[in-house]
Amino acid sequence: PTASLNESDSKALLELLLQFKRQGMTSIIISHKLNEISYVADKITIIRDGSTIETLVKGVDDFSEERIIKGMVGRDMSSRFPKRESHIGEVMLEVKDWTVYHPQFEGRKVCDNVSMNVRKGEVVGISGLMGAGRTELAMSMFGHSYGADISGTLKLHGKEVHLKTIKQAIEAGLAYVTEDRKGNGLVLTNPIRVNTTLARMEKVSRHGVIDFDAERSVAEDYKNALHTKTPSIEQNVGNLSGGNQQKVLLAKWMFADPDVLILDEPTRGIDVGAKYEIYCIINDLVAEGKSVIMISSELPEILGMSDRVYVMNEGRMVAELPIEEATSEVIMSKILQSSAKK
Image (cartoon, rainbow, N blue to C red):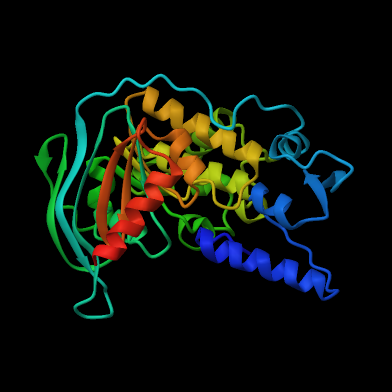
């Protein structure tokens, strides 16, 4: 229930549940946000692969996040985020004075003179509250797939480019993993095989005719590489768990072989074990020299995975922080300070 809420709104909802409890009402909350579960729950039932693993009782069992994670993934996890050695190179993507207007409400800016960059082998996090303009920024850079009257400069490999269609963006080496995998990212009624190659079908076809053997080979390779749990690549993606759907979505854009990969809420709605695997995939990508821009509403994720953090608020970039200086308190203070100035 709190997946699309900011921290203050989430806290208000949780307090409401506790108020209902005092009034004698029973609530069942289903969430991957472990701190919220342990805050409001009297009992926590952990489910894995369709089966009940165990039920923890407050005051009797350990309610710590580490204990819950152990039940979810079946083992102790020494760290929520895999270690990475950063080898950061030249600037791969740079935007300057990027301004985007709302496509329906004339005169309303959703991105206001935004400037940012990402380097080779770097994970750059973009943090901010819901409605800050992070998704709008990402989609507008990705072939103007969102917005109106877009202006500013976009450079790839130091050269200015004009990417006015998604096709042009893909061909230039840009990819965007949407936050809405079910609505915009995947065709749920189609199998893994088809979804994996959708972004670059010309790589598995000739003269407009699909080479099904090549398509099957590509899908099998990514299924194995990303450890996607499925009986077959012919399985419709709508039948997969959220974490495995996310892996198929990542495979789709990895197959496109981008230089810069924009990940919008890459772990939303998936369990801790699947999150860790996604983080490992991100680390592998930057180790290959790819550049990753990661948009996330979860501050621990931004802080645990980024080399550098941009803070966005009300359509503007309000701070750029090296990861050594970035904390939850600093990020929130930057957001509050920028709101006060306005």
